Image (cartoon, one colour):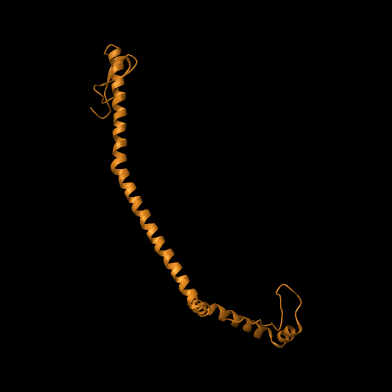
Length: 162
């Protein structure tokens, strides 16, 4: 069992305050300015020299063994489930991505081709209704069964096919 004991300070000093206690004024007066600065630097160095490992070791001495084991088990369980979740998400992502590439992408390409064919068939029907002569207000797109016709039904050469 840990017993807490309050240790009373001999002096109270507030850096923002202009007031000091009698004990502090005597101790500050007895030290020269150089000695006072060296003393405060020495205390700061002790704090800065303490490493994280030393602080953890000190915590090991403070925290009881049963509580340390409970914390360790909890951290291990969280790590296990985190790893499991990350692996599951990765595998699901892989399955969904490959499924999309193997099934959805070709399906989208095929539906696009189907729309192009329907558009081409409707254009062919329009041409047949106009008497089978392209050029009466419309020209056939290049590569769809004949040369492209410009104004007045004159064939136009496609660039780069000379």
